[in-house]
Length: 151
Image 1 (cartoon, one colour):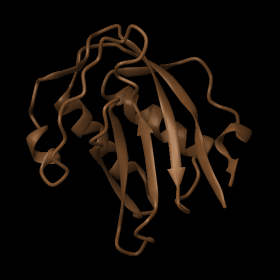
Image 2 (image 1 turned 90 degrees about the vertical axis):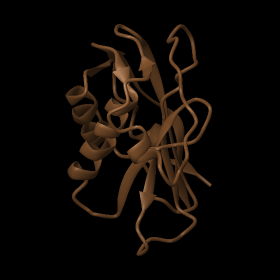
Image 3 (image 1 turned 30 degrees about the vertical axis):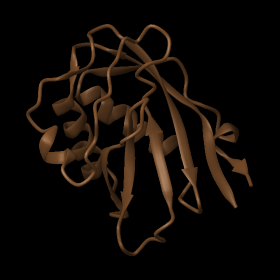
Image 4 (image 1 turned 180 degrees about the vertical axis):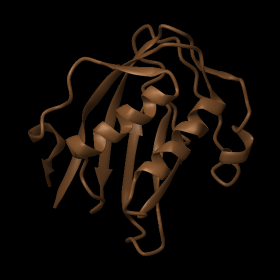
């Protein structure tokens, strides 16, 4: 079974990024994924991330996430407590800072338990959505080969 477990894209914040920006990002991702398999929400993990929330038609054990690595290097980011049931409303219109303007951060891509692996086409959607909230990609895309882990 194929999975993804690899460093992803690198980004630079063109403005301060808040909890509300993360909610806007989740909504943009949901609007741009045409397959309707999932929605997106902030993930309750230390380094911060966006979790794919697969619908009832998908296997219940699928797991897929883009980790934001808010504490790595010199990003000086902050990830807050996530109440999975209420995060989308609690973070909406909330100006608590996640990243300061000019912060650089990298992502880590994870898909396990049969969830679809990441693709370059899919990462292009992420880049476009990040760009709409003031976060610009820097550097290259991961290689197609690096997106596939054979388990």
